Image (cartoon, rainbow, N blue to C red):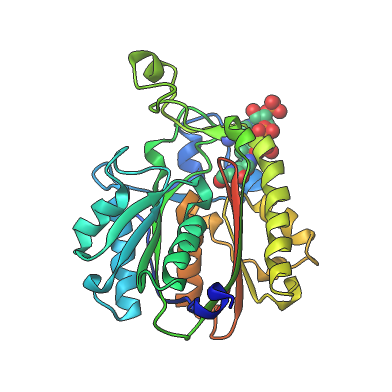
Length: 333
Ligand code: UT7
């Protein structure tokens, strides 16, 4: 008997929520801080503004608000949650994990908690991990969050990166208790030969914090932008092909694509390789910038709450981030 096929349970998403900090940083604001222009940022990235957290507002604070909104939309209580996974590259602290901070803030006292660090792919890696626990019946209800305070790891003197990033959080509640929708297929990938192209070099075991690492600005994100761009397009296209092939679909069978919101030109390049499907792509980067692991769950929540995504729609989410890491997932809503 094929045990896995006969015992795996359906995994559904029953609630979503998101949070964006109040403060908005526009391209014109950036013009006053660094040598850049609104025209350059819009034409090279598609970004017009991004949200920035207060100094006393942490990744777990934003995650907790998004989580409470997801819990409310799912119609459950925090105590029903068995597992909390936070995808983030900007945790509250190196340890304990941000999911523990969230648990304390929302009172999900029955949950086990851990983070997944897969950079901008963090939310999809976290959701896929939760799916495994739920499909096998190990746990019933998961809170999966993508949350970032990227402003705390952004070098505000580096015009090649600081124009891109924003803060925010998105969350979903996933469960094996209903068939109201389903995760149909997923595909994840990683390439550890390219860690040097996108990273925060300081503060880990290679370069522990020191006066020198601070002087060398090693605690901020570093990116070889044009190299990352090429890999992002290639890997996300490959991931779309692989995930659709897994369930005998093509892009024609997909109603909505929720891509990682890194750069409008990346999204256009991907859409052009799939029958010019740009109208299917859900895009909010013009308003929020690149929020790394928070990008997909925030865009998903907005599209669901606005009524864009409807019951029965097939959603394909595709992501790419440092590592490199990438992945795609198809959900029938
Ligand atoms: O989320 C994880 C994945 N991240 C991504 O996928 C990001 C991928 N990369 C990108 O989105 C793009 O590479 C960037 C938007 C970061 C940069 O765009 P680009 O078209 O690759 O520009 P570039 O780095 O090749 O730079 C072109 C020029 C350079 O000037 P020179 O050397 O040609 O004179 C840069 O110095 O643009 C200059 N430049 C800027 N000019 C005005 C770079 N940043 C800026 C800026 N304002 N903010």
